[in-house]
Image (cartoon, rainbow, N blue to C red; front, side, top):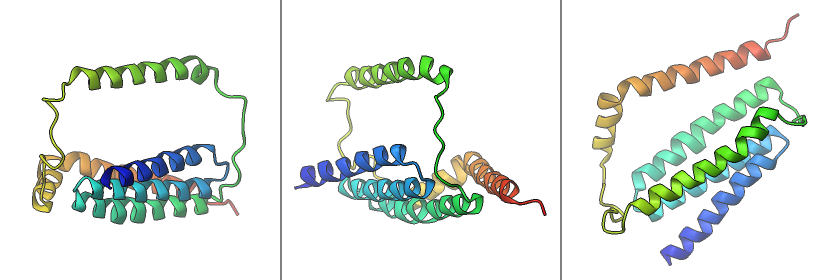
Length: 163
């Protein structure tokens, strides 16, 4: 039963991610990203990480997506205009993607089944996660907060109309 649910929500996640990429309107892309975040939360639940699933819904599908939709509406973004594409992206994109897939497959094949941890072996309580986030990784956490604030300020400056 768990495997069937995992496969169903994994397919929903991948389909929504592909839909996110092919949409031409930014609001539709943001809604597809919310579906991705929701299906990821279900996958976390199936893996036994209830706290991470709740944080996924509250922080990412809730707060961050509200921020994205707010910025999209603030910028009054319309339908995406297609160009002929970047020559640099065409030259380095496909080989880069192939190298990435090879690196991931090599990393997975290098680790044997006896070295892999079972599901739930690295259980972390909310207290332990809070300790890591606000003590050991405080600087990256604060830098991320400042970068999000700068992005919001940049969106406001770009959206401001000259009168």
